[in-house]
Length: 140
Image (cartoon, rainbow, N blue to C red; front, side):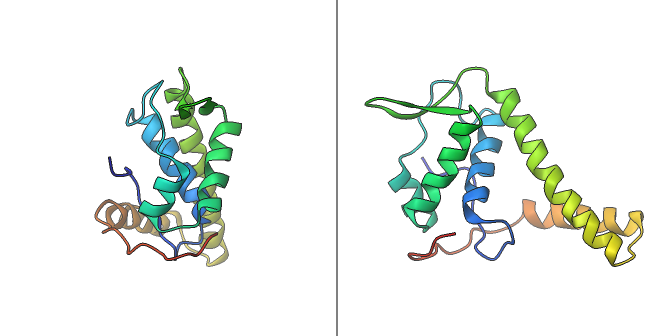
């Protein structure tokens, strides 16, 4: 099953964070339910074209957040009751990025209406974004 998200190696957000946020969003919307296994680190790394260490760092973050746990002999399992937690965690991640964007906008003396227009434009662009070519051997 293909991953329900992409990474953008040109984004200012570290790739491990993009992976963690992608899984948070997928768990939050029910793409991964309680008891479901995440793909292996190797499978994720191959599909996204990133270093397995980068994937491991993302999965470790999800584990620290209490969204997944290692189950001996099976792999990383989505924990029960994490859907709302994942949504809230995803909301917080988006809020952090928006706060940074708002700081940039304020530094550029941009008014709120223009900022909202750009945010809506970015949402439209993100919803139509095409997959990027996999990276080879790089990590972040």
